[in-house]
Length: 484
Ligand SMILES: Nc1ncnc2c1ncn2[C@@H]1O[C@H](COP(=O)(O)OP(=O)(O)OP(=O)(O)O)[C@@H](O)[C@H]1O
Image (cartoon, rainbow, N blue to C red; front, side, top):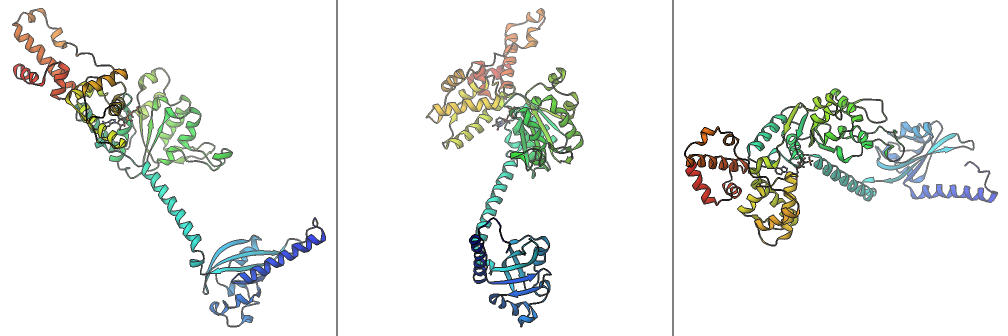
C-alpha cells in the first residue's frame, strides 16, 4: 500500500490496518477472491474461490493457479483492469460456473504502477440476490415507459375531421378541402378568425393523413418570446450553453419527425427568424443552435393565422418568399356568423363537453335560445360561444337554459347582435317602373327575399329563422307556402 507522507506514523499504521481489515472482510464475506499479477496470471485464490474450480473445469488448484486468467476463467475482464488501471466496481460475469456479481480492483505499488488486480465474487445467483434491486429497476423502467407512452399519446392527434362539427355549406367546403390536403404532403395554411377551429382542423388533417401514427407537435409562435423561438424550433446542440441546456435539446421540428408540425399564429413570426424557417422548409434541414451541422427532418407543416398575411407582406412585416412557401394549400375557415346554421349542432357538442368536464348532466337549449345564439356576431367565434354556454351553465340549476338567461349573459359579455339583414339589393335597385306593379306581388317578393336570407343565415333551421324574422314558426310555414 502506498504510504502517505502527510500522515503521522500512527496514522499511517491505522491506514495499513484499515486496508488489511477491508481485505479480510471481503475475503470472508464474499463468495471468493482471486489475485492476478501484472501479466494477468492467476497467483492466488482464497478458500471460498476453490469451490468454483470443478465447475470451471479444474480438479486441482495447481492446474488453475499459475495460468493466464483468460485461459482458466471464461469471459473474465481482469486484463481490462490491468490495461486501464481502472476498477470495475460492479459487473455480472457469466461462465461455466454460473452467473456472478463481481468486482475488479487494480493493485498498485508505492509508485502507483499497476502490479496486479484483485477479483472479488460478491455474490452468486444474482437472479435472487439482486432481486430487490432488479425489481426496483424494473419498476423505474416501467414508469419511464408509461411516461413515454403518455407523452407520445399527448403528441398524437386528439381530433379527427369528424370533430369539426357543421353541415353548413361553409363547413362542408372546409372539411372537403381539409380531406384533400390530408392526401398531400405540401404545407397547409389555415386562415380564419380566432376560435374558428383552425387548430382542430390541423389535428383533423394530421389524423386523416398517412402520418397519423406519427406525432402531432404544435408551437404557438405568439406565446413564445422571440429570443427563445429559434431554440424552440430548431433545438440546441450539446455544449452550446452552459447550465441547464448543456446536454442539448431537440427542437419542435425534430420532435415532429415522422408526423406533423403545427405552427400556430404564423403571422407573429419575428422577421429576423423568417429566413431560417424558409430555409428549413425549402431544404428539409435544420441547424440546431450552436451547431454547424445541418440535420434533416421529416415533418409536414401546417401553419395557421388569424391575421391578414397578404397585408403583412405588403407592409414588409412578413417575407413574401416565406408566404408563398406556406400558402401552397390555403384553407379559409369562415367565421361562425357566416354559418349560423351550424350553431345548434356546435352548441349541442359544447354543452355535452361542458357537462362532462363539470361532472353534471348536459342542459338543453330551447329553440328560442338557439335562435338567439344564431343572431350574434361572435367575434371570438366558437371559443366565445363556449364561454357563454359555460357561464349560462354556471348560473342555472335548471335542466333547460332559456332565452332570458342567455340574453343576460350575452349582454354582460358585451356580445353584439348581428345587424338586421339589409334589404335585398335586387329590390333596392329596382327601376322605378318595376314599382308600378300590384302591391301584393311586390310584398310577396320582399317576403320571399327576407325568408330566404333568414333561412340561409340559420342553415335552414326554420325555428331559428322565424325568431330572426320576429314571427312564429306557424306564421313562417304559412308565409313559405304563400310566397313559394
Ligand atoms: N366546428 C367545430 N366543431 C366543434 N368544436 C369546434 C369547432 N371549431 C372549433 N371548435 C372548438 O372551439 C375551440 C377553438 O377552436 P381552435 O382552437 O381550433 O380555434 P383556432 O381557430 O385555432 O383559434 P386561435 O386562432 O385563437 O388559435 C376549441 O375548443 C375547438 O375544439
